[in-house]
Image 1 (cartoon, helix red, strand yellow):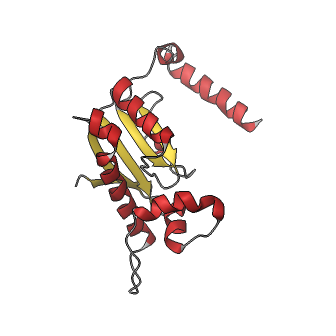
Image 2 (cartoon, rainbow, N blue to C red):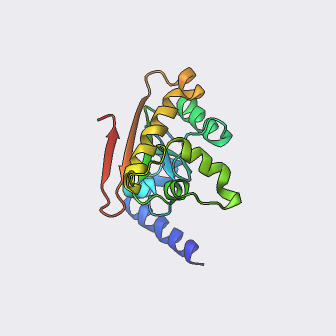
Length: 182
């Protein structure tokens, strides 16, 4: 199996660099960041930021949505703030986001409608003048999720002093652009 072989290569590479790496890793995690990212396979947070294991607590969903009703997100946020004592919350979107595109272009697949409705809440109303590009919509989506995160009950109750930022990963160049705060 390809995944098993790649995992074995990963283990050997890490042990060659630091034989005690996994002994240290098993002691626990103290990540500085809680990162909300899109599920898109091209935008893996640890890979694009070259963060070693244990440095980011990551929650992923389609189009990096902050949804108060999403128990998994709320629990992850709570755990990151209260138990891991993260110092920064990051919402990371990306160019060419399929979730944003599906929401904007009116995808009608029944299995996606509830989630696409969440995404649409963060997008502007359509007008007849052509409107924003998909990449502009992705940025607006991130800014909307930053705002939702600031208003999220878990953040409101436990997030005092925890910094929030928003960024866009440019799939076409690999650049990570901070868009909040500017």
